[in-house]
Image (cartoon, rainbow, N blue to C red; front, side, top):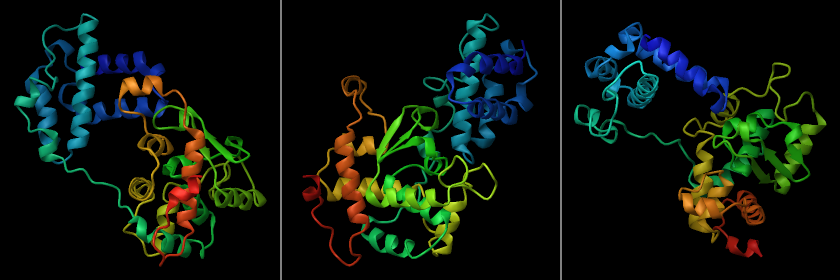
Length: 307
């Protein structure tokens, strides 16, 4: 079998275990873009370290994140081919103890670019300015900030996910693949009520195209109209995380659960079966109160809001 044939077989074998067809498409597209032109038509048994480096070296420094994904996917396909009896020997795309001797470490060539975030001390003034503006994108942005959710989670929020004062995002829409319940503060509920008055379609924040949610650029456009092109929507999650860590006494696991982050320690995760919903409710109420506080005032003692 050729490498491309093995790659297609690998994708089909694992498709059911991936979150969506989109992921499978992206997985295959990466290989077609970078690996196929070099050794896609070659017998998979003939793919060696020289060919792997021919793919990786041109993009290792300029597109290191992409190169890292390509390497991992090539390694997976070659492992599949070996398990199926189509090749033998060591995997030429293996990193540890192999390619790490031939290519510089990711940390030395890949500078992580964090999403631009607003310092939490500036948030009350920002929220006051935001509430002076109008439009679905503006309301979606405010809702996204109040719930500390990811952009896609807010944009694709559906009416069927709202039950009273709780927003439940299904597992298939979550990055971590786990259902996420979010306690809604009074202002978030007011936004829901405002959008319901003009309800049309399944999405809470509908876009211009019928039956579709707001576009991915809608909230960024709202930020630019506020002359805050230096910020990103996702960055407000960092604002929330920093505020919660520095200005509240809520436990780390409560804060991480509010952000729908998985617990890093597997043993801890095994015993932590609940979603800390009641503690998160108090955290999100405190966050909402801070968002509505006076811009010039010092941050109040939010621990009082937990009682």
